[in-house]
Length: 281
Image (cartoon, rainbow, N blue to C red; front, side):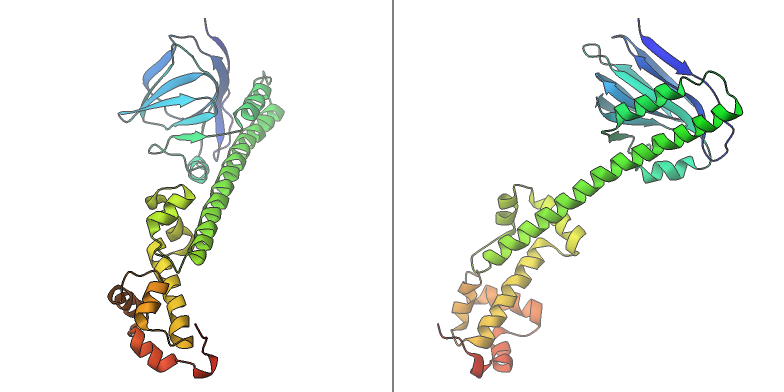
């Protein structure tokens, strides 16, 4: 037998109003649907596991996840028989809801988010369940609690996004440090990805997001910057400059150099050689 507590009050705000809220400790055979609702609903999973079916997709859900049901969509959800879930929920509607959900990055295409605040939201909903009459004062309290739930939701998500941004910056910073230390070797983008223990595609995405350039272009620019130093401040042969900048031969080096500077290494040296600042090798 499932343990359940439900409160059904419709508050009067047009921007965001409560339809119902509650919590349920589901039995092994518990399921709901297929069904269509005319309001929004968020489930916050407190314990256990379950399954959510939406638009011919199946999501297996766990503790500390949240799933969205939107009006007019056919959904089915059921408990995992071997580890049935316990969840708390809110049903709501209003003109302001699409904006709130957009801020949470929740929609039918992305109906699942990971959260660290489900227990906190459960405590808020338990308090909401204590308002047994919809008096004007209680309606104000319920309305404030509904907004508080979204505040906690956004707060938790922002914390996650901040950690992601910090991790992204960390990887890019470490990649740049590694490139600067190894510019004079035959360093490749694959080498950088292996050093960071991430995929090449992930590394590419991070560089595009943080620097608006690819790792390969950044690496090439770093090598060419060193080549410019050698060409303008030494008289070592161009093939030696190529080897010193991690290129296998002078041809590959010259081609890369011209792509970046629009002139050949030889022409660059003719224009920018600094006789008074020559470094002896």
